[in-house]
Image (cartoon, rainbow, N blue to C red; front, side, top):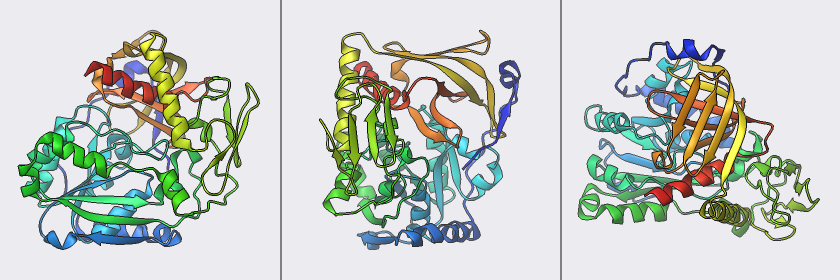
Amino acid sequence: MKTVVKELSYEKVLNIKKGKAQKPVKPALFWRWLMKTLGKGELKSCNFTWNSVGMENLDKNTPCLILMNHSCFMDLEIAETVMYPRPMNIICTSDGFVGKNWLMRHIGCIPTNKFVADFVMLKNMKYALETLHSSVLMYPEASYSFDGTATPLPDTLGKCLKLLNVPVIMIRTYGAFAHDPLYNNLQKRKVNVKADVKYLLSPQDIQSKYVDELNQILKTEFTFDNWKYQQENNIKITEPFRADYLNRVLYKCPCCKTEGKMIGQGTDLFCTACGEKWSLNESGFLEGKCFTHVPDWYNWQRSEVCTEISNGLYETKCDVDIYMMVNTKAIYKVGEGTLIHNKDGFKLTGCEGKLNYTQKPKASYSLYSDYYWYEIGDMICIGDMKTLYYCFPKGKGDVVAKARIATEELFKICI
């Protein structure tokens, strides 16, 4: 999927009139039917099935909060299918509205800036539930999983459940990550996909529990390992491109400790610095030294980042192309610059000295970062409710995953 991109000077982008905030729209039955119909083809191609657990406890006219793990773009097709014909507003990244604001609003989407404190979003959720009598779909992880395991949840989620006080439904998918993992550059694999749709919490359950208890329940529900699921269920992925771009996730060689020199190609992953090689077999195991399990390698990289931070050595610095979002008409390419990330947070400078933006570590518990974002490139996004800066690293290998890991670990130190 692509987006609308325009080149414009930084000064002109700053002068662009911001769009007015709009209240959510309850999606009409036609849009609900259309969304379900458009998803039929892909769901059929992966033999999608789903299982209902306790859903008899939810009245068809009662609005609810639907929480779903986030594996790939097909997640929305799954949600629209299993919840049909229930009216449903969808929490969606604001850049998804670019070039299609009217359509996104009418299919029920509510925009938000990822990993930015957004009180307007909560207000819109309450409006959808209480005034529109529409359910709300939310991906609390906010971003797709890099390594196939759960990404952090905000500690404010339990408070959100208390404030909304509606039934909570959990949709958990199996096989969706293996079908279309983010790292694999939109190359889809032939994998069966299924989902559990579970009545998780009643309003009475929510009111009777402390916020910490609610957060723990959600953390348990959002604990998973897609690679382990593949291995334990003997799911074979035979596509010859299954390791393409796996270096985006596994960016550091465990043998020579060199970063940014890993290459994922075909079914192999190898380090161009020391020549060590791994093969990703059909069952999802790595064959080679040190690690056989992708999440174990990713967790080792996290421990390496933690060591760098504790020793005062962590810093990521790279030249970047800079894009900005200030409204939903376009993503604006404004120039080039330098992005620095260290113990003090992010610092973005550029556009011939006119741009100087800083963001402290306590600003967010994680980072909006993505691979092959709208088919432009690997991306790191920072910013606030007014302006978002999309940074595309140039000439430096695979810094996106490390920046996300470091953001999460620096935030832990600040709280």
